[in-house]
View 1: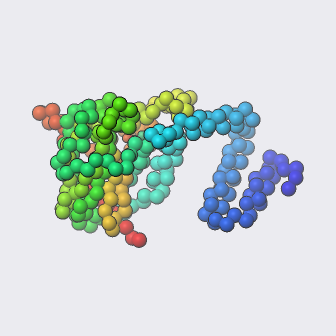
View 2: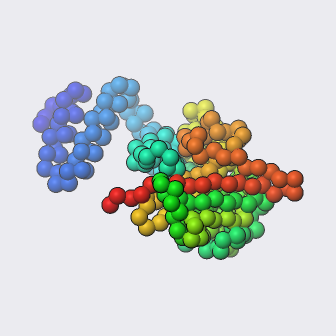
View 3: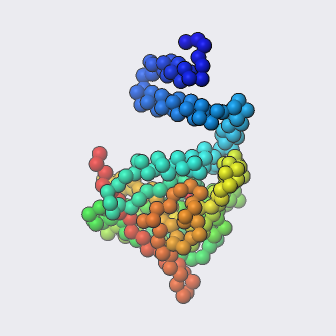
Length: 277
Ligand code: BEZ
Ligand code: FE
């Protein structure tokens, strides 16, 4: 097709994809072309603005390495990560809700025994966490595999501290035969997502703050159940209403109760959805 104009180019591009063998990819790219073109027409995108966007995405890629994933951050602050989580994790009432994975999970975290210390020297106030993993009928999820990771009191994950020689504030453990678990750690604090890259510049340009409310990350796996990726948030945190990545769910907010001896107690039970495949 020659002489395409601003209205006929969308159809011209779509026709060029007529022979795509992968049906799902065709659905995705077709919709993407429709939305991208409509977007450009709607905002009457200038050539300078397109170049600016390309430079932004180039910088986003250049900021990525094996410890930093700026594209995940971009997806997070635009709400795309949480939208995808919400669409793909619709569970029956009563099951624990999922939320964003985030960029700070590390495969192969140290294994700790029940009651063990997850902090491993990370700075922070002492905290004891306990709970139970059950299925949707209240049955114990025997020996569920629990991964936990969190920021320290200065708002950093261990992977953001290049001087560390060993993991801190992350661990994996197995629930007991009744689905129960408990461990020692430090009190999680609110922290800003990394702002020294293009996503930070975008947040500033949007007039938005980068803070996430204090939370503990959990990933829980067991045969016969859907894997649950979620957080437990700290009640009273000032950022619960304005999480930079839109990850807060009312049902995931819990009381972290400070004791007279200075220790903080957190109790939270998880309800897994049975898998049906
Ligand atoms: C996190 O909770 O670790 C996180 C999630 C999204 C973006 C940055 C950090
Ligand atoms: Fe986090």
